Length: 406
Image (cartoon, rainbow, N blue to C red):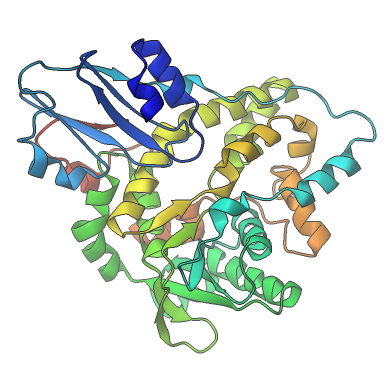
């Protein structure tokens, strides 16, 4: 931060902050300028929340500790003017070009060689790393990339969450079936690696207990039913507890760093919204929808997921959202990323599916949202509930002082 100290123009300071790469959040106070600079990276990969209480401004990575620091003044003598750095203005632009003739093969080769940032993958101090593993194409490709980047003698844990109603139900949960198929592929393709599939079976009773005690506090200030459902799935995944698929023994992953497939749907047109836009307005509008999804990602997903990781003392990594990878993806023609004239399970995220197909991996499953594939929605037994509705669980977790997610 030495270069920041020498700067006197607030816009110049903002420019330096914006130039940072990777996951980050910042709270930087300049008493000489009477300015407080607050912000995080464009994808919200680290949590940063705020609250106001009378003359106090409180900043934290999780909401539940905010009242404990409410006595701390930002500046007891000269209240700081705050500048909330709007990193969403750095919206990455998806290319609108159509794929040139003969370019497909060369770009496929390029994609196969693309790594998700080895310097962020290798965690030398841990005996294992873990993947929040649905068995879908996103988490499967992340697992393949980790194998390429991580020392071969280290274990890679694959944690799969299923919300179960009874002992028979677990076997039909979609994500459980995909995870087992994914495990078989990884072991056949990379037999020298120790792959451990941890089955996190969550009963309704355990969900209600952990949701009340831990999860709603981690997800706050998020408020929607969708936020609640995704936070629940992620919390049980990052906890890393479950049964070893091979022997049925209860195990805990010792992984501190967890990898997720976040960002793939935004980058490669994986959402139903992309297909709806394509069918309604044509192929030329799909890049706009991708840009809009990337624009919303930081405020919609990132802070919430980061807070869930913080309360469990885990670190979350999203390889698809690594800055250099996103920049590369946005040079790839949209026709290579997806082909929405093809059926679901084939056309969306086509480039990922092609890479997996070239490896002999399962790759033709349609996208199923985390909360559906894990069985969370069925456990709620409320067909009238919408993802955009206010969650009464999360609403009850809010504190009396106003708070928000940057």
